[in-house]
Length: 493
Ligand code: NAD
Image 1 (cartoon, protein in one colour):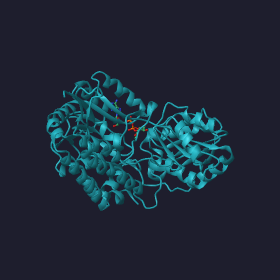
Image 2: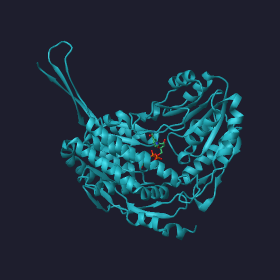
Image 3: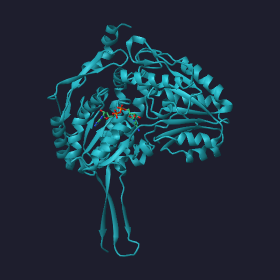
Image 4: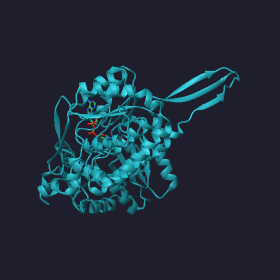
């Protein structure tokens, strides 16, 4: 397909031509004083759109709007907030093709994966529409019998929501839905590499009657300059951040000054453990899913595969057959299973980590090099065997389609290696022994475990990590509590 054919396709033009490209402040789309910046298709480098480049002035206007709207939004009937989120669920599903095409264009993922992300993303709208009307409290007699304890929940107040580029719709709904359900207003800053899906979704909320100021959206090329004054102001009462551990630490420090509450969904370096008694077909399927979803650009990606020595060779061969047979291409093209990485630095990092592992003695079972379709940032799906445990690829978050396989001899060794990291988001365990599965799941220092499955994401489950992978949980019963403060009233008899 030529470039002109791809971007002149009616389905593509329909989405791109209707996009809002300004900042949303106090219910109105407006340009930013800083002009605009380009958003490119990572599969080809073609410019898709230009969006507003906001700075501190727009940030303060957005904060003013969110602050002004807080009292009335916090007082709306929970059912009203629930209905808005439920309407957003229905409307996003009704426009699924537009959203999927846009996600594929700006992020690169194959269209089928964009649809899968949409299903995951809308589930947060439905889940938190249901949670909005179940914010409970407590009224009990004090243990000493003198008086009553009345415990209620209040919206924490205006929030700053910061999202990464890898799941442009799901990361947005995973924050917007619980914040709005809890009665909080927000300023949302999507990632500069993939802001378009968030803009389209915000427009949809506006069309559904979102009151002015309740959600304000700012796109920018200089996130630090925009968010620092917001966190220093004192009116933002909550930061919900998803992104790298490195940036998360900077933001945690900034939150200290005004004691801003935080939810931090940070990096991961997930181990995947395959025991000798595992169903090898299920383990390979799980590894393909956990590794190749989003081209490996997921915080949940299985980046370190520890496999029992008895089955390591066989597992590596089967995994290499599967990954080596995957088709690379533009995500909109039929049959594409692997899209490009997001940008040149990502491609360079993945290449460097693979070269380092090979330099330290790893064998390349498949892949190992950048690949070329259409001049985008593609890297071949790669399986490495006999990887040294001190190779950089075992310690750093690779964020690419690279699966390093390391044989282990004992369960104790596998668990020790799995835990030997500053990260603690998720782990995957494959074994047919229930007893071992539960024992190992308990021993792993992570927030989530996929037991005999390569995916854990579910709107009804508490998603999040321990150690340097984060603080707090998104989704599940815990998700809305991140946006609520507890208030206790001591009541005399
Ligand atoms: P990133 O940390 O570079 O950026 C995340 C967001 O922070 C973006 O919106 C970016 O513009 C913004 N940002 C960057 N510097 C900032 C600063 N100084 N001040 C304020 N905001 C700033 O991460 P990324 O490359 O967009 O995303 C990939 C990372 O996100 C990976 O580490 C991945 O593991 C992590 N991630 C975690 C989860 C999770 O739930 N734990 C989910 C998805 C991605």
